[in-house]
Image 1 (cartoon, rainbow, N blue to C red):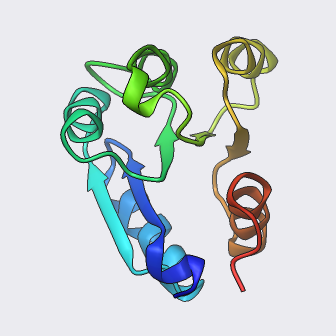
Image 2: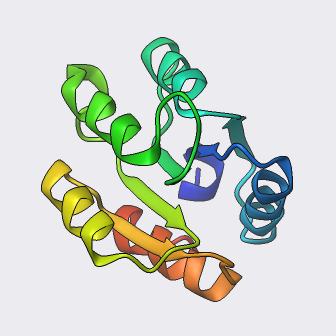
Length: 129
């Protein structure tokens, strides 16, 4: 069984269009096991009940922003090592620095193209094909 068949990815974004664009891109890469959450609070509940292998999360969201979600995931022992990729429309080095201090694995600026997304995912989980 290939990594594409096993990998479960959680997409977290408060904008449904962004969630669907990332989902479409993941499906183009051959990833089929994709779940999504509309905010950080919903994502955290999902990670506590049925953890994903990788989280791709927007930074700017209501309830819990991307950094708060990352911190919560890192503080919960069963999910502490789950790779986390942050998406943001802002190229803000302070967000990146805070994320790295919390254990952020990768960081991408929106809009994300599929080549960049694939490289970011492979950077944390290994080659997809």
